[in-house]
Amino acid sequence: MTATDPALTALAQGWCALSLLHGRIEAQIERALQTGHDLSVREYSLLDVLSRQHSGEGGHLQMKQVADAVVLSQSATTRLVTRLEDRGLLSRYLCPTDRRGIYTDVTEAGLTLLEEARPTNDKALRQALDEAATNPELAPLVRAVETLRIPA
Image (tube, rainbow, N blue to C red; front, side, top):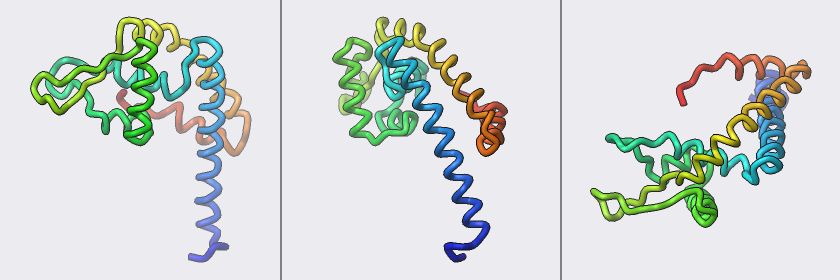
């Protein structure tokens, strides 16, 4: 393949369209969450991921799993956890079976904020997708997003 290969160009164009759609969605959600709840998209995502933990076997996530779920490095995730812990939205404690492990749970205040912010997130997502659907280059991607059925 060369830099002028039509397949490569189409692939690059598809990637640019996907990146554009992601950026628009994230920016719209970011504005809505910041304005309404003083939360960033990453903070909301972290609260959401951690709120899905359970006390059963394999129910608590290791920091690497959390980092993968919120698409951040482990060090960035740790800093984010610390910021939310300082705000009283998360708490950390030692794993009862492995003293080297540290678990992170969402506090009651964090759960309340998450539930208050969820409709804002969903509305901003819907608005961003509706706006993107009017762009012929982004419309196929919007349809693809709308038809995905991936378990949380």
